[in-house]
Length: 58
Image 1 (cartoon, rainbow, N blue to C red):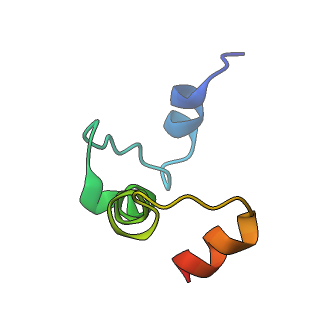
Image 2: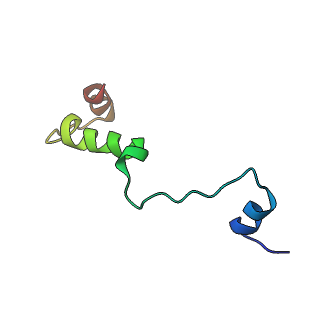
């Protein structure tokens, strides 16, 4: 019995392995969100309490 992802993909033809580029901002929505948060929402802002950060991001 072989272990790993490739044997599973060879068994089930409905599954297909797709390689993404190492850095693909347009395919990773979370990276775009973090870029926005760092650049606009929380840049140069200090908050002692977490709820203040949440208010600022909202």
